[in-house]
Structures are given as C-alpha cells and as structure tokens.
Image 1: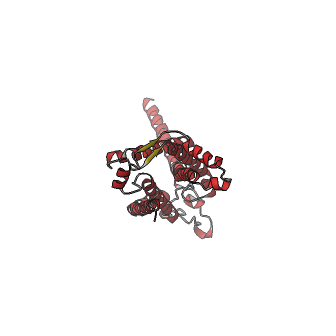
Image 2: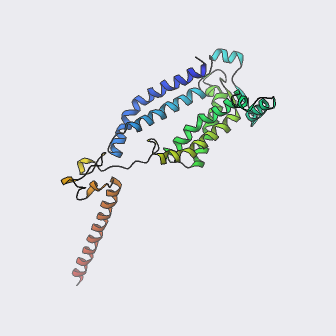
Image 3: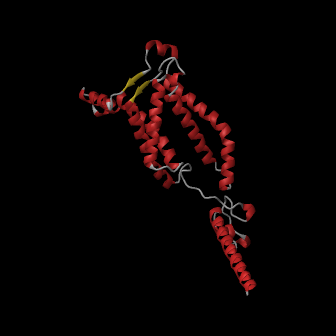
Amino acid sequence: MTELARLALVGIVGGIAVFVPVAPVAALLQRRRFGRVRPTRLAAIAAICIYTMALAGLTIAPAYEIAATCRSRVGGELRAEPFAAVARILEVRAGGASLLEVATSWPMMQLLANIALFVPLGMILRGVFRLDTTTTLAIGLMLSVLIEVTQYTGAWGLYPCGVRIADIDDVFTNAAGAWIGALCAPLLTRLGVPLFGREERHWPESLGGTGAGGGAGGDGGAGDGGAADGRTLDDHDALFGEIGAQQERGRRRADRRRAGRHRD
C-alpha cells in the first residue's frame, strides 16, 4: 500500500469515527426541522465527514516517516513559481509525447488530482450551505493557502521540520476545483440529489398533517383543510402570523371605540 493510499484510508476511517457521534445529533435536528429522518441525508453527512478527514490526511499529515523526511529534507520546500505545473506538462509534450502520453503523464495527473481534491468542497459550500460562487471560490483559495502554509511550516511547528512541499500551483488548482464544484452544485440540485435538494418542513401528523408520507384526509378524500392539503409548517406559520396580526388590529380598534365612548 502506498503512503497516499494509507493516508486516504486513515482519513476514511477517521471520517467514520467522526460521523458516529454526529449521526444522532443530525438525526434529531432532521426530525425537528423536517418531521422525519432521511437515510440519504445521513449518508450525505457521513460523506462530508469522510471527505473532511480524508482531505486533512492527504494534505496535512506527513506522507512519510517524520524522522526520515527531516533527514532527507524532502519537505519544507517552497515552490513559488506560478504555473510551473503547466510548464512541466508542456515540456512533456515538447519532448515528443503523444496526447495520450501527455494526458497520463505524472505532471498532468498531479494537476488533475489537485483540482479534483477541492471539487467536493465547492459542491458542499454551494449546494449545502447555499454560498454564492464567489464566496465559495474565496473560501477554497484561503483553505488551500492555509494547507500549503501548514505543510511548509511542519503543521505550525508541531513537527520538527516541514513534512510536505508547499507549491503555489496547488493553491491555483485547488481554487479551480472549488470553483468547478460550485458550478456543478446547482445541476445536482435540479437533479434532486439528496444532499443538494431543498426539503420543506412537513406539518407533523400529530397536528393533523401529512407527515412524511403526504397522506390524505378523512373519508378517503384530501381532507377538509389544514396540513392535509400539502401545506408545510412555513405556510402555517405565515397563516397563523396573519391571523394574530388581524386579531391585534381588531383589539386596537375596539380599544379606540371604547375610549371614544368614554370621552363622549
């Protein structure tokens, strides 16, 4: 097993370990907000936990044994030349490689991997947290800078030396991945993917609503009204708010009439 595969596996296991205590809280919040617990949403939350931990493992954890890394000075290097990755790809092509060989070359695979690494982040920020594309791009950029600085400084001094190579091209490619993910998120919303689809709060069955199943009212019909007509809690909140406002206006008019009679 390669070191990167080992780090990815550690991230997956760590993500599952994080999800275990998060799952009951997430289920409770879903139940309170939507009136039901959807396994697909819990699976999506598990995917977010796994992605977060895998990202940390692949980018921050030492790729090799720390003492050997410090002795060989493999880490702690700063590559500050922008677009050097593109230059390396062009060099492969200039060396007479075919397009297929260029597409499968190490510089190209490394560039594509850095882009793909942040695509889920962009999808999550835009599709789940409803951030706009510009904000998502800015967060992806700042997170990538934080990761590169962490790599260069040896986790801010936690390790005796820098354990990874900090590359400015990684910042550009990571940010591009977050931007691509943000552009893809609306498409997933329209396709109804559970993580990205909007969900309404359902009127609880105990209050006469349809609950999660959207059932019918009495006598086999659609019901006489209330939540059985498909309205959600938001609709009822607005309705009750308007009724309360009307009642308050009625009380004020009655108070003014009584005050007028007293003056007469």
